[in-house]
Image 1 (cartoon, helix red, strand yellow):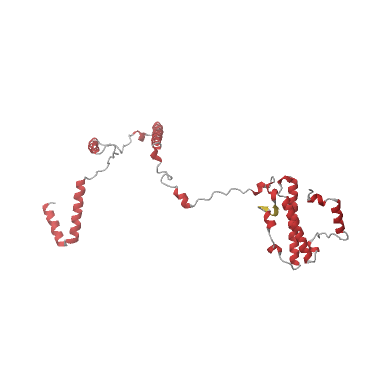
Image 2 (cartoon, helix red, strand yellow):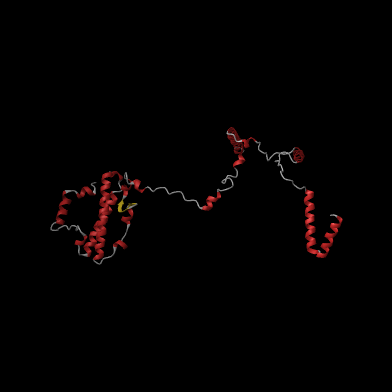
Length: 282
């Protein structure tokens, strides 16, 4: 059974078509929309353009047409879309409806514009052409910025360095470095002192007074006090006379007595008290 396309190409079909078209002049669409001054014809040409766009959009869905044919079809569709826009403007000028606002947008929605290139659209298989697919790939969004509250959650004593000695590694290293620095400073001081003595500075010959020296008696008393303390405690040496606990209590009692006398005793009573102390030799 012959197909419709084959039937249309038979000699009889072509003869019959020629008879129907005899005496008719096929009207062509004007090149410029401004050349048309009749509203019905303008709407007719707009519908014709929409039909051509629909056919080409259906053809461009076939990815097997080849890269060059797909690009040509895409260019033709964009050209027809621009021409359709011109006819819609002309229809509005002739008093017809505003198709740009109320007309269907299905053909426009099938196309996809490249970001930053407004006006040119890609349809069907043209979206997957080499060099076009990369244009539609979106860049990954940057990671969201953390708020101040989220940043403060991770801040603790360790952030400020208060737990650096807890691991037991840093402190021994600091002690070794401290000993090295002290030894270097002592060697430097001795070298400078010998250089000054060699230069004839006699004042340097006198031994410097050791302000941290402790007498034998004081050292014996301090050793007795240190034995009373717990083992492992840090030991201190007092270089000034420190009152005992009993002396501190007596001083507090005397001070309290004087405050009470000044508050409650009269001047005559205080004078008698002072005279009695003087007589008794207190």
